[in-house]
Image (cartoon, rainbow over all chains, first blue to last red; front, side):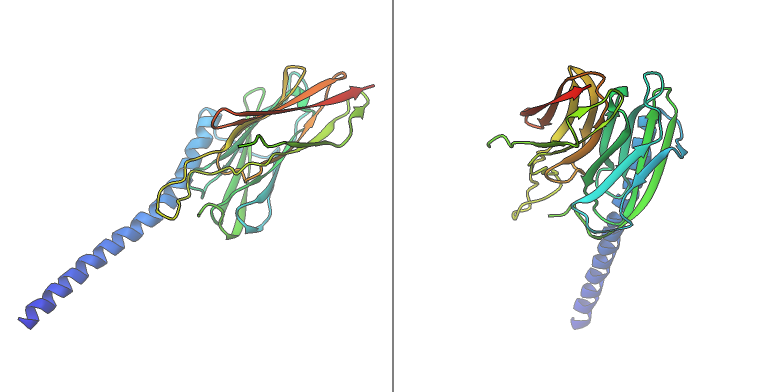
Length: 154
Length: 109
């Protein structure tokens, strides 16, 4: 009798272990999904075009101690005239629960295609800025930010 | 909730034609992300400013579509190259439809 109980306990423990393992798999899945979401968000923004590295300068700290407020500066090299200007800049964070951060819309009246804001990062991850020019070409920059304390939980 | 008063600073109000003004704006707002849960495990509903825009005499200068990943008390710094003297209008739009507006006059010599 005693032995049977032990077997049951062992079986239950086994089931528990399987559940825990699948739970862990579930935990790593969102991180992977976030990176895929970020790539999908970028492709949607560019209309399927793969952005080229260059012309965009994304300035973020290498190490951010507080993920709740990370300074982010983006600058795009452009003459900003009526025929040649930066139309939009998309910023995504590939490790956040939702990858989108902000989309900036510029116009020739902006003078310089540059903007600065403060963003939330859930953990260490890549921040990507993609710029769409008035002629439709797309450029990007990508930086990794190491986050000491994440800024999405409660 | 009382409408928060935005803070706006231009690096100068008076420029020569062709020059650029640097604008800094800050507005007090909780920017509740919709990802957090309260003590009972219920999701706290999202409440953020989802759009910020700056216009010069009705023409778009700079605008921003904002996601919950923008920090509380959203700060934006950007540039304006006004072609003539006029008024800049700043608008922040909340998820609940509330609009916060402010204006600044600029002089172009």
